[in-house]
Image (tube, rainbow, N blue to C red; front, side):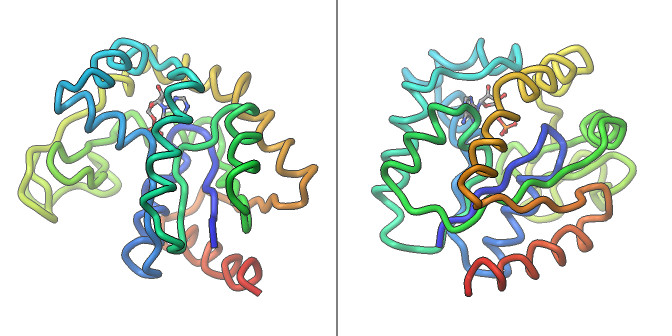
Length: 211
Ligand code: AMP
């Protein structure tokens, strides 16, 4: 089964992909995390994408297809959850040509909710766990509850860049939702609630998609 989680920045794709990994045994492919790892390791690919990502723009389809091809080859038929891919119609068309998608879950949240979540977001530099300064604070300030790693804010989470990312989402990624609606693979859920309520909606949909 291949499930795609879609939604604007801050909608909770990463958090819910982690839920499917931890509680449902899915293999999680998060293209944002993969690219950030390349940057941290200072690889050639990391150097090519660093500036683009920090500006909040999209990395080229050519690079993303290479990255995804490699990940899909390594997935060995496991149940997959995709977080952050596809983000453009050409990426979605390519994916349909190489894999059978079971369902696309659109986590839909209001703009004010998205911006306030991102404004307080903290990310672990070691294990990529996500916290929020007031809604999900770490037990010890600036330290990850899960692995003890240092918490940081993402460079592309600054207010100005978030507004740019929301605009990029509107122009380049929303047409992907239409693509999946036409293919009858699209399911929308309300992403405004707390983490557990969104997970509950996803779990119910999975039963429907899996049947
Ligand atoms: P995310 O962690 O999903 O918010 O992704 C962070 C950044 O990684 C995005 O703003 C893009 O610069 C880049 N990125 C991640 N996935 C993709 C994709 N499918 N296509 C293009 N760029 C991507």
